Amino acid sequence: MNKFSGILICTDLDGTLYRRDKTISEENLEAIEYFKSRGGYFTFITGRMPSLSKDVYTKINPNVPFGCINGSAIYDHRQEKYLMQIPLDSDVHDLIEHVEKNIASVGIQVTTFNDIYICRDNPSMERFRRTTGCPYEFRHYRDIKEPLGKILFSEENDDNIKLLSELLHSHPLSEKFDFTRSSRTLFEILPKDVHKGSGLIRLAELLKVDVNRTIAIGDYENDIPMLRTAKLAVAVSNACEAAKKEADIITVSNEEHAIKKIIDDIDSGKIVI
Image 1 (cartoon, rainbow, N blue to C red):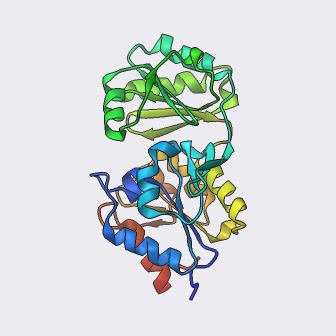
Image 2: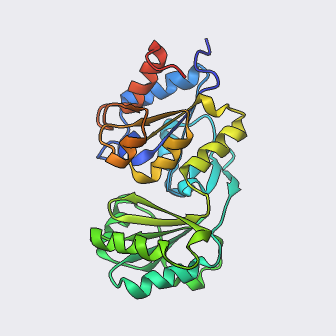
Image 3: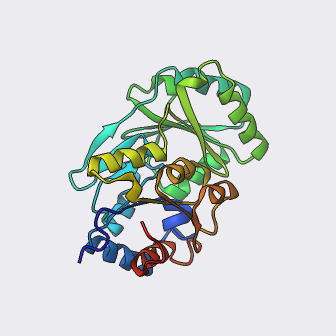
């Protein structure tokens, strides 16, 4: 019986699907398989590029494409190809330079649709690389010839993250871009009107799913556009306060099989979508 037919669930990864130790619980995996087997669409939208998402899409085997690079691309893992890419405007170089000159401690990383480049390293960026295990090259941002997907800044000092945000938002070219804080130490530049919410819309259009049949699950500020876009917004209990304020439902934490809980609640009729 296809009791979940026409329902699209899009989840965040870190802090939502993933536990603190970067694993996915068997309970979540079994619930995802159950949801898919009865007609539901299950996928994720992540800040990662596809090559850094292989571990998760191999494990959960989403039955539809997924959003990556915080919504600037849609990738079909079954065909191993991008279905959509939205690159940054080349004026982004001026914003990077503005930050580079004004905050000496900030780490700078450029993500293209296939590669990662470290333009300025720092301890926070080094820890981030170690956690994600991403391959990279050192290169100046103006020497990168590929289309740019996003710019990621890394900084441990919260005051410097706030200064970084102010510098970017006040720049004369700021209206050509979107900005998001993706974790306590990470801040990103994205193409204009590109975010996890726009990624969810594009996935729904691709699948011909009514947006009123969509569920988004997340935990941090960069998930907020996705929470605002979906018909049902779910924050895990470990989410930041800003994400919780956008949620229709606050469920259990990422350590307590949050995805299973949501699917169980749909199955039982506690959640109607």
